[in-house]
Image (cartoon, rainbow, N blue to C red; front, side, top):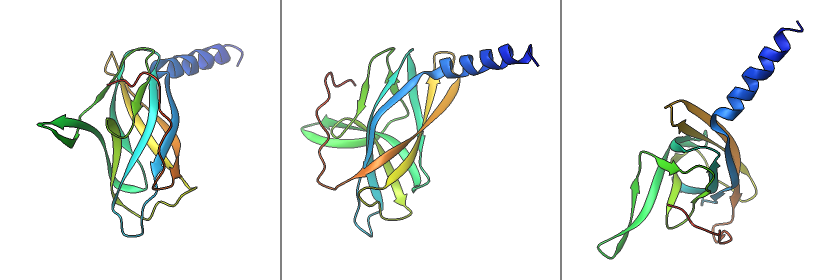
Length: 152
C-alpha cells in the first residue's frame, strides 16, 4: 500500500497538470419563458498553450463556441471550431467577441440560478480534457465589468 500512494499522487498531479485551465466569473444571461437561446460568458486561462474546442450544458439541446465580428460594417455572429488559449494569457468570452451560445434551451434560465457548463480543452499534444464550472444566471440587463486586456 505504501508503494501505491506515490504512484497515485503522481497520477493525480499529472492529470491536473495536463490542462491547468482556470475559468473565472462564468455567467449566463437570464431568459424569458419561451426563449430558446442564451449566451454564456467567462474568462478562460490556460497555463500552457491550448485550444478551447468544445462546450456543453445540460440546460440546452446544444452549445457552441461563437464569435462576434465586424464584416462589411455589420456585426455578425458565427460559430467557430476552436478558440486559442495562449499560455498564461486570459481570454475573455464576452459580448462582442468570443462567447458561448446555448440553443434549444430546456427551460427558462432565471436570475440567481446556476447552470453547469463543461468546457473541452485540447493541449499541444492533442490530448483533450474538460473542466466544468457553475455559471451564475445574471439579470437580462446585466453588463459584466470591463476586463483588462481583451484577447482574441
